[in-house]
Image (cartoon, rainbow, N blue to C red; front, side):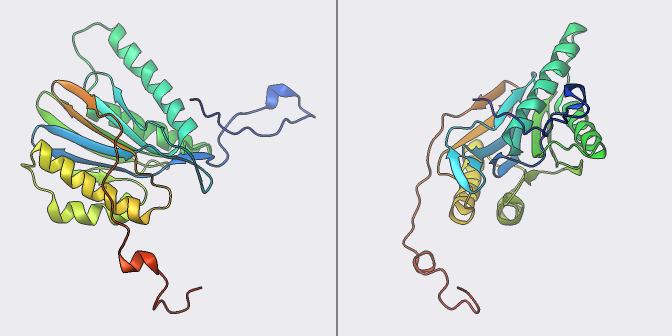
Length: 245
C-alpha cells in the first residue's frame, strides 16, 4: 500500500523543472500511538486505521516498524510522510552498517536524527506531517522519546501522540510504574486504547502491540478489544448538555 504525497499544480510558465512535490496538507492519516517502558523493554500500541479526511478508508495500515537492531518507531499523521521517513531511516541504517565497525545506532541516536529531520523540514516550510514515537533498548538501557512535526521533542517513561496526549497519558501517569511486567504493560496499553476507541472518531477496533527488548522487536498480529456500548452516555450523548444540538 503506497500513499502518494500531494503535489503542487504544474507551473506552466516556468515548466516542469520548477515543480516541487510536497505534502501540502495531510490526506490519509493515522491516529494515536501510545508507548511505555516496562520491566524488560518498551511496549508500543497503535490501531490500524487510515482516515481519508473524516472517512475511515483503510483498516490495515501498519504504523509501527523496527529500525535497525535496537529501535522501534511508531507514527501518527500522514501515512505517505511516514513512508518517506522510513526511506530516510533505511538509508541511515545502511550507511551505518557499511562502516562494519561492530557498532550500531541505538535508539537515542535515531531519535536525535529524527528531531533534526523534523525541525529541518519545518524550517523549510515543508514539514513532514507526523508525530513520531521512538523507543528501544541498547546495552540494557531503555529509551523512549517522541518528536512532532515542528521538531518539539522529549523523553519520558511513557509517551503518546494525538488524542492519546489528552486521554491516555492521564491514565499512564496514574497507573504506570517502573516494574511493570509484560502482561501488566499490555493490559495498561489496552486500557488506553479502549478509552481512545470510545472517544476518538478516527480510531478503529483493530490494533497491534509491539515490544522491543535486548532480543529484538516483536509486533503482534492485529486483534480487537472487547468493548461495551450500552452506557447511557453513549445512547444519548447530548442529554443535559447546555447549548448542544
